Length: 214
Image 1 (cartoon, rainbow, N blue to C red):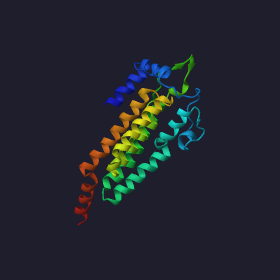
Image 2 (cartoon, helix red, strand yellow):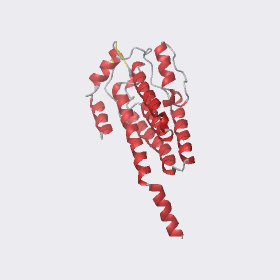
Image 3 (spheres, helix red, strand yellow):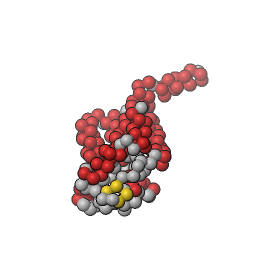
Image 4 (cartoon, one colour):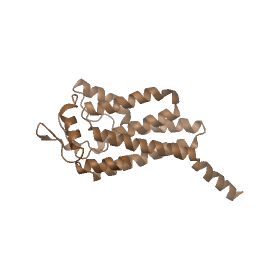
């Protein structure tokens, strides 16, 4: 799996050159280096965020739907819409995929520590445990769920997701491998949901139960 392969490369330091180059040359909107976000920062939208410089502020706003609570609300809205359309499998599996993917992301964030990245000689501690990007993961799942629920929004959702990934890099929130890792995990989650719905897993179970009770 590409996600697992990338995890190994990041942990082994094989991608440090790319990430180090990005830190030095591809984060023009980044603010001053700071500590890693706390649990409260991860849960409460825009808590303790900096809106300086302007590019950083734009990034905060554009990437907001990838925040933990906001993204879960968006997935729940898509799930409710799918339920009203009779797509029970999709309605059940999208929130489940969000929860499982976020759990996997949390495990990797705690278990995988990349080699240190530096900017002007300063160790950027926040990047030590930033793989994979939770914002990219949650934005990807939310965009996929919304695209399934409202197909007409797909072009706009695709543009938004690209903007999220670009701004996460430019604003210094994540390195390129962080973003790629989050995107790969989101792709795995979305593919699993689509395949589960196509398989009719819940319908088959319901029919078996009806057959045993008849």
